[in-house]
Length: 45
Image 1 (cartoon, rainbow, N blue to C red):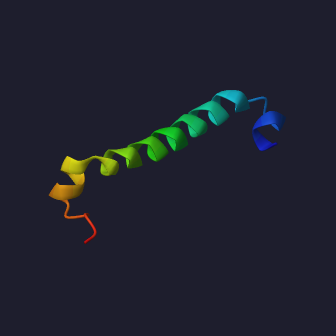
Image 2: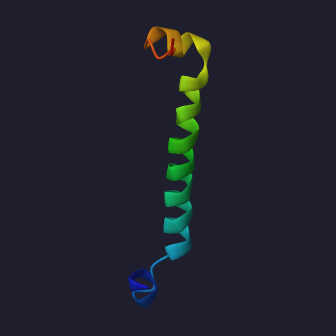
């Protein structure tokens, strides 16, 4: 509401924050590949 009261573009801010969160979540998928798991010794067992 602070950005709206100052007439700043809140939608752009929400979009940027959403994209950053999405990129962060998607970056975790890298660690699901076998080569990365082996390199960082993440294989269980």
